[in-house]
Amino acid sequence: MKRSRTLAVAGTALALGAVAVTVGITATDPDEQRAASSVAAAAGTAWPIVQSDPAADAGSVLSDLASAPDGTLWAVGGLQKSPAYKPVLQRLTGGTWSDVALPASVAPYRLRAASATSASNLWVAAQLNTSGDSNALLRWNGTSWTTYKVPLSFQPYDIATAGPGSAWAVGFSTAKHWNGTSWADTPIGIRPRALAAVSPTSAWAVGSADGQPATAHWNGTSWTDVPFPAVDGTVPGEVASTLHDVYAASGDDVWAVGSVQVPGEGGETVSRSLLAHWNGTKWTSVLGGAGSSMTEVTSDGAGGIWVLSGSGTVRHRTAAGAWTEETLTRPAGTTVRVSALAVRPGTTTVWAVGSTITDATRYTDLAHWRSG
Image (cartoon, rainbow, N blue to C red; front, side):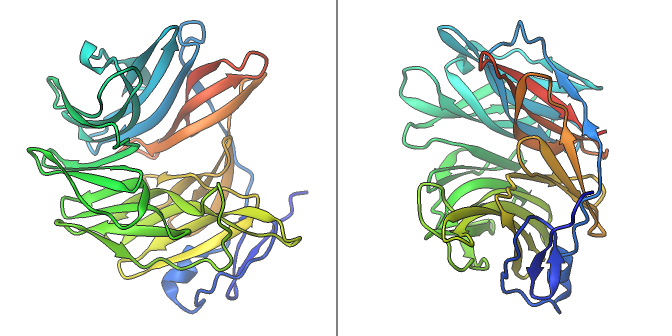
């Protein structure tokens, strides 16, 4: 029998883990009640795996997904072929993922993250994988690739675009903005981990600041720190308390997920998942139980969200606030590692990408999963 374990949040229950924690939000606030609505971990289904040829793609990993409003879906990653690394770009056509040819100029780079607004506006954050003098921000305009080199000191690990004239990229404690002509440094007051674009005048960055989860908002000109509910008792250490991912449905409907390091019942440091919502005025948040995790969040195509909760588990929250839990198919003898989730625009089909790791050999093979 499955037991429902709940998290006490100022009188409202959110079943995310095993131990009750108070996070200091007001239960009478309608938006906070929405963010902390009861999670019933109903039994779900397994997402089937759609995977490339392991023999051909041994050593490969997919690191991110980019979905565009026109229904285009891209995946980026890389294939380790001794002694060189080969960047990989794939595009979903119908229900089939196919490799997209890349020019030789892209060969030196590891494709880390991607964002798109159409089949003719794709941005990729790329880190140098061989000897050289720069990392890069790559753009596909539907006809050709352009490489914008950035210093090695700027290691881009996420990117977002709101159209041909607007894009943002973040690295460790740094950010850059594309104005349609060039990239420029833009000061940001947090250590960003992820980006989401709403429009050219509205984008979100999430991460950490001073040992706490933190957020910043782009207003069309600059980044502004936005107050985020402090989590009491966070423990500093090698594993940071931070927000890992963000999804923006609109300017007043933004979701973020992350984790915090806090003392456990026995005084040990434990990790707890963090789920947060922006209603256009303020952030509210709730914590999961000890050992819980949330690392990715995306739309479900119907007003709700999907979150990655452990490498092989995804949770679905409907627009009405009901939760279910599903799993990703794991081939026998492998470990699943998921890097990204994304809904295919215009549908309720959600894709996950990453890799499977063969337990016996530790070889990786790029993988896609699809919601049932």
